[in-house]
Amino acid sequence: METKPAGDRRVRRTRAALRTALVELVLEKGFHAITVEEIAERADVGRATFYAHYRDKEDLLVGIVQDLAEDRERLLPAVEQAREKGFTGLPVLYIFQHAAQERPVYRIILRGEGDGRALREFTELVRAQAEQVFRARTEQLGVTPRVPLDVVARAWTGELIGLLSWWVETDTGYSAEEITAHLRDLSVYGRVWATGLTPLDAPGALDLT
Image 1: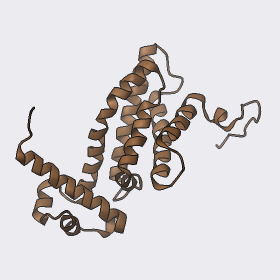
Image 2: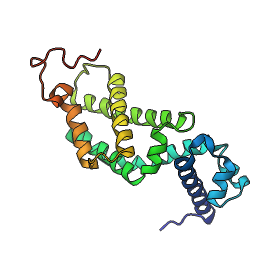
Image 3: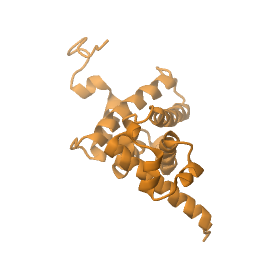
Image 4: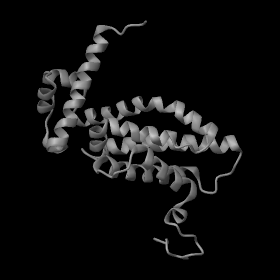
């Protein structure tokens, strides 16, 4: 079995401690109210050690998003399975399960803490992955999208992030499996179906423009 050098392990531990400290302090005081010194003290490292890893607290926050993205690389087998079997909901289920495990981290990102850069980066990562999956699926089936896929991916991402934000901040009563099933049905069947109506039942009833 390959072992990681001790230096690598120390780096990972230090970064993990700094990121945990940031999350705790942001939830306690808000991002703008905390300082690098407070983060370093909470993580039990020196100020110089902080700057050896991150430029500033904004850089640390974005690093947390990148950590989440790397962690979610385990999502890829589910994505591949979804491509083969159609709309299984497995990738979305993984995101909600991951958010349940890392709820404090998701909360500070989805709130747009800092200057919103972390949320923008998170949104773009999800959008790019969604568009890749939608494009691969249409190419596999040889179909022509009725709506441009960049529009589809952005609409889907906005819907997902809106639900995810509500779910991590609120005791919704929905499990990860339940909220995934609702989002999957909404994606597959549409909003008119979801309300129990049809376009003939109430023309214009869902026209929000």
